[in-house]
Structures are given as C-alpha cells and as structure tokens.
Length: 424
Image 1 (spheres, rainbow, N blue to C red):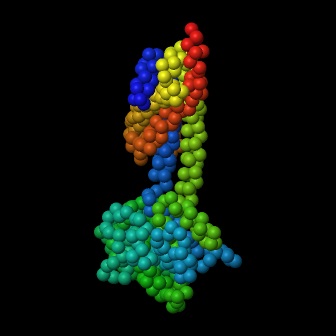
Image 2 (cartoon, one colour):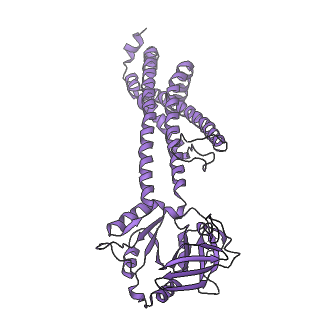
Image 3 (cartoon, rainbow, N blue to C red):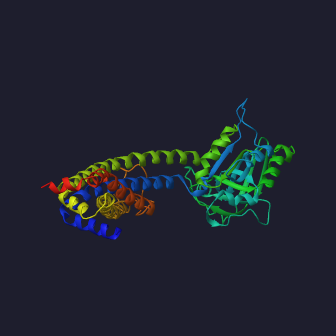
C-alpha cells in the first residue's frame, strides 16, 4: 500500500515538472549555500591551525620559573612535577634545566651562540622534534652529546670579518667546541653532535644535552654542589594527550598559579572563533533554506487547490485521511530531497572550481593576501566538504520540505469528500 502511495506522489510531481524544478531550485540554493559556507569555514580553520605548528607544538604547555621578586608562582621542583602529573589529560612531563653562564660555540674562525638546556634522555622524544639530519638521541661516547636546532647552525659569525654576516656551518662535519663563562670561571668542552632538528618549533635556538651533564657543568661553574632533592628547574613542558585537551590542561596549570604558555590556548580561541563563524555563515545559508521552505509550502498549497476534486474522488473511493496525508508529505519530502541532491551537486562542483582556482593562484606569482590565512600549504583542500556535512545537509533539506508541506498536507487530509467533489 505504501509503495502505491509513493508511486502516486512521484507521478503527481512529474505532472508539473516546471513547478517542481523552480520549487526545488530554492532548496538547491539554500543547501548549496549552507554546505559551501560551512565547508569554507572548515578549510580556513584547517589553514589557520596549520600555520600555528605541528601536532606536537599544539599539545605542549610550557611552564617557566618566575624570577620576579616576591613572585607567588610555585617553584618548579619535584613536588611541582608530582602535582602536574596528577592533572587530567597529561601525557608527559618534561623538566628542563638551563646551563648557566654565557655560551659560545667555536669552530675555526666561526663563533655562534645558543641556549642550552638539560633534560632526561628518554624525555627528548616527547618534544615531537623532527630531525633534518642525524638522529634524536643523547647517547654517545662522551658526556657532551647534544642535538641542536636549525637556527643555531645558521647563526655563526666570522670573528675576523669586518662585517658580521650570519653563516650556516655544517656542525655534523666540523668539530664544535663549547665555551661556557660564568663570572671569573669558564669551561671548554668538545661537543659530540648527534643531530640537528628542523626549524619551525619554539626550540630552534636551543641545544639539548643530558640533565646530568648540565648539572655537572653548573656545579663546576658555580663551585657549589647541587642538591638533587631540592633541584629547581627553569622550565617544564607538559604534553597533553591531544590538541583538543591542550587548552584545558593549560587552564588547569594556570589555576595552580604557574606561568604557563602554549599554542593550546590560542587553538581553543581559534576553534571558538571559527565555530562562531561557521554558525553565522551557516545561518546565512539557513535563511535561504527558510525562504525555500515558504516556496515549498506555497507550491503544495497551490497543488491542493488545483487537485481538490481529485482529493475528493480519492477519499470517495476509500482513501483515508492517513493515505492523503502520506501522499502530500511524500511529495513535499521529494521536493526537499531533489533540491538537496541538486544543491550537493552544485556544492561539489563549486568546491572543485574554487579549490582548483585557489591552488593555481597559490602556485603562481599572484598574491592571495585577500584571505585571512595562508592557504598555500593546503593545496586543493581550501574548501572541504566532509561526508557528514553532506549527509546532514541532505537530511536537512528533506526535513525542511516535509515540515513546509505539513500544513498543506493536513489541510488536504481533512477535506470532506462531498464538498471536495463539488469544487470545480
């Protein structure tokens, strides 16, 4: 029985193809507007997230020791590490100790500088660094095994030159000596460089060596023995479980009184901004769908007026109110579905054209500064329509058609057969 009613509804719609096309066209425009505007928002959000850094950076919260007199910030000691470890969504805790004194790197006539931090060797991998050469390890034949940032290798100067110009030194192929000066004491040690990690992180100007080595050097420079139980770290990197929890972890750390910073909080603000932007732009497309709903309602109302006698005849030969209601609701739903499918087709076509056009611009010399983010790293995915968005849009278009057809359908179902048959 249901199949016959649906077949009749399809037949009724095909009798007025021009009206169906115009009515479904309104739904098509609304659906395409919703899908494209939300897809564009998601593409811009992805571009903005890519410009911040890699996944490791987005999940890290950095806590720095406070050197201000009278600061109430907690000390970064063993008790602080235990307190941080108890927080929710914390994956790893990486304490770092800075090498005190003035640091100078020397090879031949070239001199450079950097910040040197010591950390536990097994924690190095948790920083999420990508090596450009060598390997990410602090194991070697000496106690002075290091890995360093790309910027360190690119910042050497010729001490004999009249003009100081930064030059890149192949630190893996040259012997690099480290000189540390603190007050009237100095220490010269040959470095064993295991690797250089790629630029683009907050550690570009850092050199990492083992924590025990930094403690030993600091003791030699200061002349005082460091009590490991009372050791105070200069910074602690807290690794969240993923980028979505980094903001919550940072808020929890800040609530404890620590000086915390990181990309996670910015990412949360960024997601909030694009979420609001998506709602606003989706609302603009929603207005178009609302206008289309009135068009569907008007079309169905006109169809009932034109088919009043037909409705009366159907009811006279045994059709129930439920049958009539089903027919007209199915017709309204088909109008929404047709418009939704057409809108999706238009959306995918425009997605291809927009992505292709922007991709061509990104690969050419033409400036694309009119967009708020750098899209050159996205290739052809500036506008991205996820499968779930397409499904939701299609369901929404169909539901809007059905809802818009409710009043006309109920009006048709409540018609009295005798009065309907008397209508010319």
